[in-house]
Amino acid sequence: MKRKIEITFITVLLIAMIIGGQLTSAKMSRESEKTLVTYTIGYLPITHALPLFEEKELLELENSEIRIELQKFNSWPDLTDALHAGKIDGASELIELAMSAKTKGVDLKAVALGHRDGNVIVVSSQMDNVEDLKGKNFAIPSTQSSHYILLQEELEKVGLNLNDIQITQLAPSEMPSSLASGAIDGYCVAEPFGAQAVTQGYGKILTQSENLWSDSICCGLIFRKDVIEKNPEAFEKLLDGYMRSGENLDQKEALKIAEQYLGQDKKTLETSLEWIKYDDLEITEEAYSELYTKVIEDGIMENPPTYEEFVYQRK
Image (cartoon, rainbow, N blue to C red; front, side, top):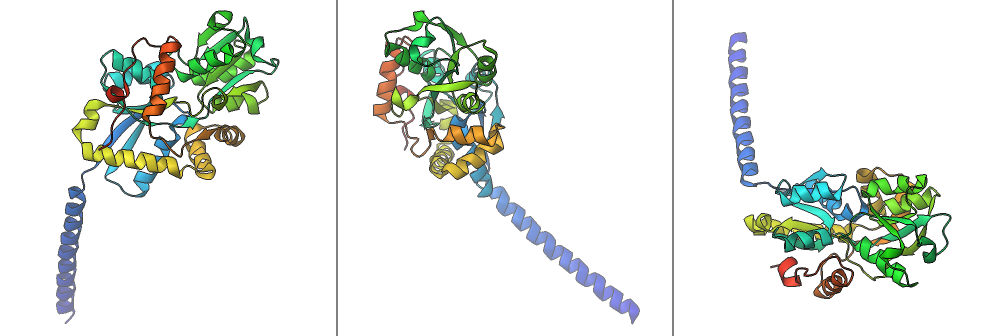
């Protein structure tokens, strides 16, 4: 009797294992039908890349077939080199750098903004006005940047120009410590590095970008054209998610994502996020036209790419 019971138990166990294996196999088959498309996107640790971080989190939460793999860089030259060489698919990048690359034959497309507003001109706490910048050392991330444009517009307000100051190009993360040590006297760069100097007391705001150039274009989401064309349907889904992520970044969510990715203290991030907007990241022809004019007038490029050549047109 005991022997019979053992045989029956083993038989039932084997049947259960067979059925379980079939179910597991069916599940794996269904999952394999959902092909993952992964985009490798470069970034610097700045608030201008928050929509990118937000989208990565949302796609993973939704178990989407679109995934983002982030690659961190510490300087704009390193990031642009990787993008131009095809080592990454896209980047959150200074838009003027991408425009310049486009004129040199690198087939890039600007597909969305990284933010609106959110840049400040910061000077040492001993300075009181723009005139105090005369003869001083001022840092920007690149001469191909909106920060370079904003600096020129601030100087022009009081009849100064670039010949009246010394320009230094620094990586964004180096600027606060350089100001604190007295190596530079002011800077304009992506956040949260302006807020860092302000909250720690060795810098103060001279002006904000919206006072010089309303809804200024600065960083954008840039992709290689061949990456876009490889899987247009997947790319449209990626872009849909990016736009949705920008809309999702209210103060509370933006702070949460910034704390997760930027490694700055909460007070610095809260201050920085008061200056920036993410709710509408489309690159309009009107906004690009204004940028196009400014890069010519301020000596950044003689023949920048047109809107049709450079900005991605959604299907």
